[in-house]
Image: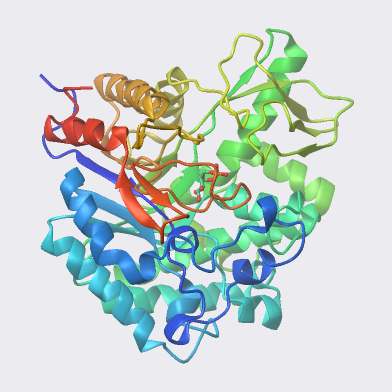
Length: 467
Ligand code: BG6
């Protein structure tokens, strides 16, 4: 018998900028990524999402493929500037129509939509007006946008999440400088992150005030950190890494407060986050209904008094990156016994069971959705077929890891592999493929089912029994 509950939801995920294209179609406003990806040297070989895989124009064909795959749920994000070209104020009805038709098409095929409100494409107008996430004004703007989405789609959509991977868009936007707005200013970053938590809390509050019949969550990277040795220094470094990558992002939305020791460290070092009157109550009173976990890899961590900065492997040439280090705090190091992808991400399914266990231990038995999980690879084409056996192996092992967590008592309710279709990887172009569906960039973006498509079809049909 399957370890997955009868009502477990099998799905897949994407995000607006990575699939839609139609970057200036039908009144859409400019996003920060529309601008950033056109600046020289920002993305792999200058790739951008202007056309992406043209899901904006081909969504019916894509939903038909989702239905054929047997998907019971689909996680996608809304492009804020497609609905509100200036970030606030005037609504672009054509944008509303697109998402409305997409939702109807999904429902027609019994596919439950899960909407992500923010998967990194900020209206550029708000970046220019007040610095985007840097300013407290973003909290009102985000609330206006969230309310618009609830009002127009809330009658048909039950599963919502506010933010995708705050550690990434804030960390890379404000600390490493690899995402827009390209800053390397931890003080601004920590305060911007605080504004994200406030915006989340306000959007959760509005969701409840508007009595939307559904659940609202927050999606975080789930990246377990393990010490490279048992030495007290390495274990301490690991504790700090786990605090920054996990507790800093999870505590404010699940407990309504920051982890105390780290908060004191940040305020002493940078004087932030600054709390305005009412912030504490807002966070405390609006914790989310569920947590979305995006799991790809774990990190091994060591004590660090030499390495500062990092370089990302964006080419898929093994070993071309350099590990991340914050001098005096910790560094990420390679596991000598680890198995790594071509982008140097450790493949470690056991980490998913372990990390879910850590979440349950710290936050209680809260509802969990695995909102992303997948293998980025250059899939070979053999005799006209896309053979992605390594992806099948990766997903199988991780589904088993989720099964193990469920057997240990975790309340995992759904699984969204990344990604439904091959799409744009933000910094890695189109050659880092994740999908069940291949897109031929040399043949008018024609869709083609991969080997993994048939495999996942069976997994869904047997509720995870046949892996
Ligand atoms: C997550 C994001 O970080 O991982 C996705 O939510 C992203 O948008 C995915 O594409 C895989 O990362 P990458 O860098 O391989 O595209």
